[in-house]
Length: 397
Ligand SMILES: C[S@@+](CC[C@H](N)C(=O)[O-])C[C@H]1O[C@@H](n2cnc3c(N)ncnc32)[C@H](O)[C@@H]1O
Image (cartoon, rainbow, N blue to C red; front, side, top):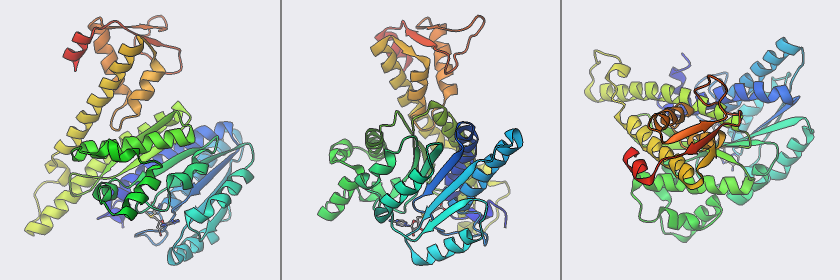
């Protein structure tokens, strides 16, 4: 079975694993230059709907593979051997038995599998992270099946770990479906999940896509505040066969370099996603018509939904950057970049294009560029100076 076949019918997991895979490798290489220990905690490990016998389509196996790769890179370069530590939590007995069979065979990484619910394991996780020592960097992955079991107050101690980064699967599809159910128990579960009651007013009366955005934004706001994270961004993962969001992956970090790595992983995963969706949609059509199509799914795929989402978030992102420029006149390039990257499907290359057109239209100047440097780069103290007017700005939008 090819690696892609392992994800037939659950292509959204392929996209999730693509982001995790690409992000973790670069994360471990970069962080491993400054730290001698990487501590990885998967709070909802599985295995879950795994197709391969050796679990290569599980997040825990992918994480191990990527961390080991980074360890090899460092060893080859400097002879230094990164210490790798993993804590894998799994609540269900049957899944845990498989997880344990897998981890029992591993001897080159410090691994602690635990048959526990996340809610009951917070002190254990904190202790595991603490034991990594002062030269360790922790990464926490929270990949649930719904919106319970990781209430904001439950995960708050994990979000507060410093240094540290967190990746959370926000189950948009489920949340969208149940967020308005008026039953008291249901509403209370959402208050606990978001960490406040504010979400109700934020999503009230909004149409579907706006509601979804508002819910994700509210969750991000709470993650940011709880963990004191300067940077939180999200990646959209779509259903394979229908034009709807399956979930968002929400990434919280205290490093702009981390954001860059996550956004690269997002960009790459979006191409993987559109290819997988093209094939999934073709499979669905062929099952329905019982006819094999002449051309590949990719050739026949209409990317209109994906394109409309990209346009949507680009417009939001551009408007936010313009608001920032207009409010402050002088804005560090790094700040504009962080804002651009906080939106899904919005990348630094987009910001550079906007900047170029604003400069051409004499609405913006740039200070701090080196001689003959035309394009701003992060980390160079470059400042954007806004000269445009509101009228021109409206025309621009
Ligand atoms: C979506 S699956 C994880 C998939 C895995 N991260 C991957 O990508 O391969 C969620 C897993 O968490 C387990 N689980 C559910 N609630 C839990 C809880 N409160 N604490 C720990 N594990 C839980 C489920 O049994 C399931 O195996």
